[in-house]
Length: 264
Image 1 (cartoon, rainbow, N blue to C red):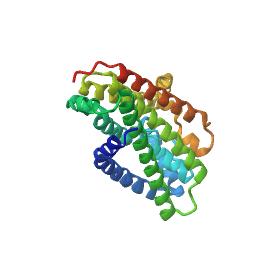
Image 2 (image 1 turned 90 degrees about the vertical axis):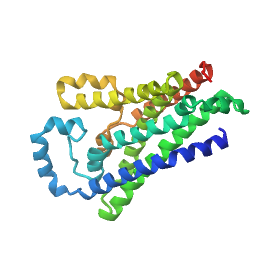
Image 3 (image 1 turned 30 degrees about the vertical axis):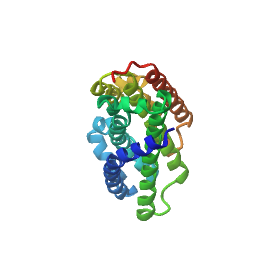
Image 4 (image 1 turned 180 degrees about the vertical axis):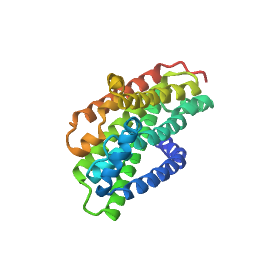
C-alpha cells in the first residue's frame, strides 16, 4: 500500500461516510426503539394484510427476540441498500474519478506501480466497508444496551454482522472490478452499481411470491440470511463463500487494471 494515497483516500471518504453513518444511526435508533415483544401480534396482522410487501423488504418475520427484530427490520434491506450507496460513492472517488479527471497520469508518473496503486485502492475500499460494518454493529449494540439492557444475544448478533460484512465486501468487490474494467467512468459506476441493484431487486422479487423462489439462485444475497443467523438456524459457511468470492473479484480487478490500456 502507498501511505500518501491512503491519506488522500481518507480525505475523500470522510464526508460521504459521515452522511451515510448519520442516516444509519437515525434508522438504528428509531427501529430499535420500536422493539416490543407484546406488539408481535399487531405486526403479524399488518403482515397478513400486506404479505408480499413485507416479504419483498425482508420483513416476513418480526422475530420474538431483539436480534431477530433487528435482523428483520434493518439487516434484511436497509443495512444493504444504504451501505451500497456509500460503496458506489467511495469506489468512484477512490479509482474511477482518477481516470476520468486525468489524474491517473500524475499517479503513474510517480514511483508507484499499477499493481500497488490498484491494491491500495482495493485495500482502502475493504477498510472503509469494514469500518462501516463496525459502525453498524456499534449502533445496534449501543442502542440496545441503553433501551433494552440484556435483551440482545451477543453471539448471534456478532455472527449476523459478520455475514453482513462478507456480503458488503462482495458488493464492493463487484463495484471495484467494474471500475477497473470499464473504460468510461459513468459506465463503470453504472455497471457495478447496476449489477448490485439487480441483485437486490431479484432478491426482493424472490421473497414476494413462491413462484419467483427460483430467482434466489441468481443473487449472492441468498447466501446472507440475517433472520436465520439471528435465530441460530443458518450456517456460517455462506459468509466464508462470500468472503472468498470478494477476494477473487478484488484480485481479478487488480489484474485487469494492470493490463488495461489507459487513455492518459
